[in-house]
Length: 336
Image (cartoon, rainbow, N blue to C red; front, side, top):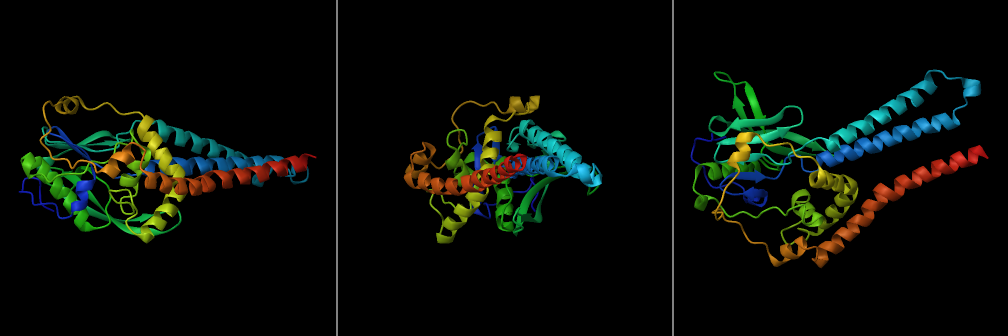
């Protein structure tokens, strides 16, 4: 792909213009590449850990140690299940409480792209020396379904070689190469040209103001349009299924973003993010539907999320609690 020093063209795909979190003379922030994966990982770890602890408890209560002893089978399920369950809960807690920065920060003043890594802390790439490329992969759901995806990566190479010294993913994964390439073209236009040459953008709703409006635009970009309507008949059905299946992970992702710790910014970046005056970058004003959605007063959005919430509560609440209730009744029956 073109280097940062080359002149930018217009974005090849306009979808990037709907993935801007913040744009001003100091920085550009785009939607995070992880989307709801943190919330999904935390919830699945908790559920798997609780399942192991429940299995271990069942063995303690129902295993006939009088005739079968405390052999390998008993120790494997009780000790192994208990240790793995407690370890999993500890890992989930660490993941939820660890500092996180949910967007990369593209600094126009410093000419660098900053990203946060849990293992390495802040990583920055020199924009003028950076090489952009598209990484192709497959996104696999817990159900086993998969879909091809592409991701924009920006790397800084070691001097005199083709080895990558540092690499960041400045924005979300896309379903097409054109969209990922368009994101790079948009970044180059922001970094290299005047604000008047940057296309108008539609800012992502702030998750701190309204969770449902934010989920519609960031987590269900393909299914929900700007007016918070399903993009088509199939998209409405897909939203209902996906929103229900990922109900608890999505809310966990929201909780982590809303209340999680933030790592301190590098001193030079914190100073470079200060700016005053009018913002010269063009932002498309919200439509009446978007305004009502941010206020939590858009009827069709509230109704759609009510239906998805019913399915989500059934899948993540009623069914697991029903399983626990059956187990408790078995305990009571066996003790009588």
